[in-house]
Length: 616
Image (cartoon, rainbow, N blue to C red; front, side, top):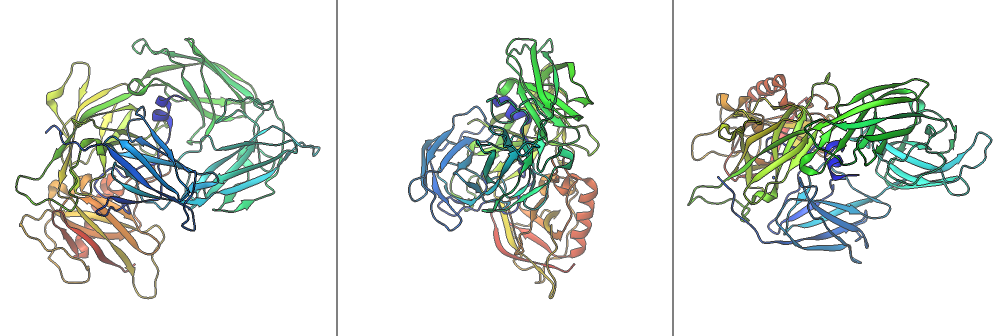
């Protein structure tokens, strides 16, 4: 599958992109050590750092090093960039030398293991970091596939598709799944499964393999012997083997969806497109196929059951992505042919990252390593209303600035986007996101000014928005601590801590509060400039032990609020940040002001022992 399709159609884990501070992000000590636990499945900038190495260890559940694990590093936001790969030694240690400056996403593969997920955010690293990757044993599902007469079905493809995570939330993407084939006895065994709930099916077209089988044109049979609507959900836990997941194969012939894919007159695209079929109203991929090389490109998807579907196609390389609008299809007892899908350019956004260093003579923060633009990732996340039609394109896109800070984000579907950044240096925060009206070009739209960032950027299909400035300033603060319930009670599930901007202190010296129970300053009037600036809001999930953490915070006065408020669910199921809703911002402001316990964060300040009493 082409790199462009991964940028367009892969449903990415939504990294925190606005404000500073996703909770629980990896903390770095003076040696740049990162507690890595979730590999991912920004005035002109002239500072540079020399190439270096990313090193660390891959550990199993008991803390032992895993030998022979494959560790791969790729530049975040630059899918076509060179990747670095190595294997761990007998102690689980690895080293990736001579890596150029950048923000890297690490992927670790160890047979039978999966990454331990702890909700620690983006988990990117940079040259010089020492990384510890924690792996856990994957689950196993095994069983037999037989005919209605009880005869084994050898060589049939069996796929386990994860539909919910371990907490019961919808999986971010239900795509290719884990695939195996039955042996001569009709037995299959699928291992290395991440904890969660799965559907197990036999037969049907391949999701992740080009190898053909005699069963590719059948409708998939789901365990125990049903269509998808009546399929059993199999709960899988770490290290557990679930046997007896048998499938009585139905062997029903499926329908065919076919047609041609053309490009609009301005595109000039001749590369073979990739086609995906989704269940209507979901992000669940039913099948995928690559169209023919010759234009007009033909495609045919086999083994389709009756139902409602959306079909989309995408083509192109990196900065020339093309995609079709989602086409709704009803399959009712017959093949569906003669479809015509038209490729058109997707949206493109470009701009500059501006690093605003401290004035000459100012004391630096704790991180003495100079920030460089390549180690910051620009992020665009689409904000879709609940009743909006699904585009089935990636809702989150990334851009990697070059050494001058210039970045481009392509493959954007039409919609509204919030822009932010993933900051690896702890000493920096996002100060503003603006549009520069001096960079207009006749055929393109210049980004409108965005100060007091309450409204997202609006993107039309095929549009190029340029002149976006992401301004990052030095002097960030950090806040970590624990939520403590009242005596005799427990913390509510789904509890979150919100930081709400109350005002920005103007005095040169403000006292930081490390205990919310001690007397503090009277609440100051809210600064209207920041009341609707979502870059000044942050939220963190509260762990089971009550701990939370924020980093990359703008200095200022914040109300600290604990509640279960979340934003509306995105199309993938993950909620948007609560502050993206004007109604939520007002509710948070009211709660923060009524609490009377603000915290003042000075420039470069780190508070690690904040206590928040939770009375509800």
